Image (cartoon, rainbow, N blue to C red; front, side, top):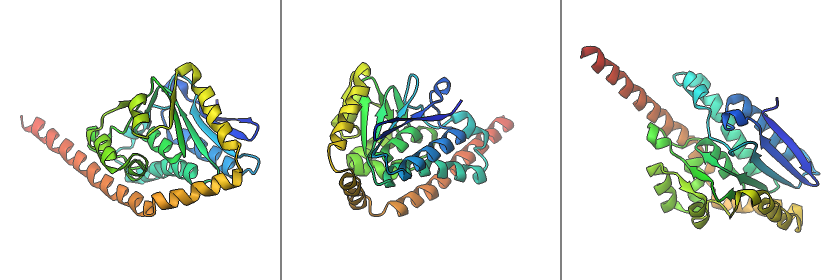
Length: 253
C-alpha cells in the first residue's frame, strides 16, 4: 500500500497521506513518499495547484512517536529525519504554484509544521491544531518556530508555542492560522471553492506573487531554521540529563 497517493483533478494535484491505521503519523517512509510526490507536482507544468490532505479519520497526528523514540538517542538518525520533514514543508513553500492544505480532525506537531509550509489552510470545524512540543522538553524544530510568527503574528505564535496548548478550528480561523473553516461534510467543497478562485487567475502570476510574498515575510528563514536545530540539540541534551539524574536518584534510593 502506498503511504502517499496522488489524484489529478484537471490542473489540480491532490497529494493524500495514506496511513489511516496510524492516524497518518509521519514516519520516515511516509515523509520520503510525501517528498517525492511534492517534487513531482512541483515539476509538472500541467499541475497549476496542489491540495495536500489526509485520508482516514484525521489529517495527521504528527510525527510517528514510536519510530522517533526508537532512535531518540541517535543524532545521526535524528538529523536526516528532520531533513525529511523540512524537505516536505520547504517544497510546499518553494514550488511556484499555490499549495492548499485541507485539514480535518487532528493536525499537531510535525503535521502542523508541514501545513505551515503550505500557502493556504482549510479546516473542518471539528479540527484540533497545535504545537505541543514544549510539553516534552523540546521545541517545534521543523519550521514551526520559524514560520508560525509570520502566519499569525509574533505574540500569538509565542502563546501557542510556549504554552503548547491545542486550539480548535474556530480559534485557528480567528487568529489567521487557517483561512476558512467548514462543516466536516463540506470541507472538501470549501477547499474546491478556494481552488477554483485560485485557478480563475493567471497561474503563473499567482505562483510568482506567492514567492515574492514569502520572501518578504520570511527573509531570514534559512538562518532561523538553522537556529531551531541548535536550540533543539540543547533541549534534547537537557532532557537526557534530567532522565540520567532521575535514574541515579532511583538507584541511590
